[in-house]
Amino acid sequence: MLSPRERPDAAIIHADLDSFFASVEQRDDPRLRGRPVIVGGGVVLAASYEAKAFGVHSAMGGRAATAACPDAIVVPPRFDAYVEASKRVFEIFRDTTPLVEGISIDEAFLDVGGLRRLVGPPEQIAATLRARVRDEVGLPISVGIARTKYLAKVASAVSKPDGLLLVPPHGEEHFLHPLPVERLWGVGAVTAAKLHAEGIYTIGQLATRQEVELSLAVGKASGRHLHALANLRDPRPVEVGRRRGSIGSQSAMGRRKQTFEELEVLLAALVDRVARRLRAGERIGRTFTLRLRFDDYTRATRSATIPRSTGATATWLATGRRVLREARPLVEERGCTLLGITISGLVDARTEQLELPLFTAESKGVEIDGALDAVRDRFGKAAVTRAALIGRHTGHEMPTLPDPGRSGG
Image 1: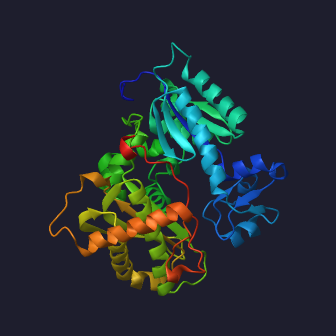
Image 2: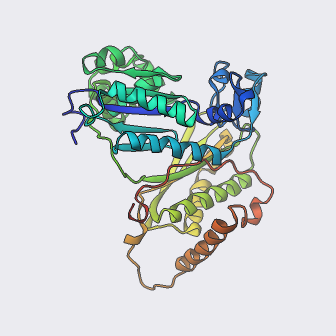
Image 3: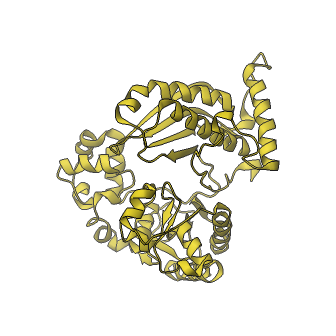
């Protein structure tokens, strides 16, 4: 398989379902079609394009969303329906080409460079894919086609909603450089503000700067990354069967003042959720990262790495509590509207080397975790829960793609 640098034509497709959750709701309920739809109550999980036109967006507080769009129809999430729709769409992806790299349940990269003689040019393949998703699954999907993954992703975003955009190799700079720097992977509000302070507003302006200049403004790693993307350097191929390097979960809490004890309870729920997903995928990890969003919408992360990789809930909960308590002064000073965790540095659990003594407190904890997992698998996730979580809403567990490497798959 040729790397993007060696590939002379635009043969990478980025396919992204439009407002996925909201589109499924509109598909399944004709009364919602053409209407502003919000999925989720306390926090917006998804919004239809009719609602987005009023400024509604994902992770927005429910009250703010309905204030911005009073006519919006708010519906509860139906994750089983979204997972089923995702499976059907991914079947179409894999029927199009074996070279599919899933990014989330509603988007993927496809390499169609080897199909030109058999099927046709990438633009024709993309048009057929879009038609199949519309006809067989009933959902709109936007597609970008380019020589590199990054450009294909930007192209699909520009083509939304329900569009198709090809970026030919000879037109890459013409397409990319007029766009705002916020279109670059890794440029959030904080990084954008730093670039704006340097007089950099478009990707073209960024491309003319020296890498060392950017490193001074945003840090060495970010400077190198942004300079490469702005100058059309993205050698990453479409990777099939790549296992995820981290697993995480988060919960937005709105603007209500949270006590630190409530945050600790929420942390326990998130750790339970993520550790269970680790074990379900036969993975273990070493690094815990805590993500915080404050009342002023700024963010912070804190992390800790443990001596040995594990999937044990008790170990990760103890680690998470320690990290959260270290961040307590910051939380109490600035308030907290979102709490998220990620466990990274993942490896196959079957590669773990046992240490003496074999029967430790952690090994006993893993046995308990296994028993609880079995109960929840059989009777549902709510069959067993912590006493502190009874009657509390800890956020929705968002559906994710299956980890492709599990059980040797």
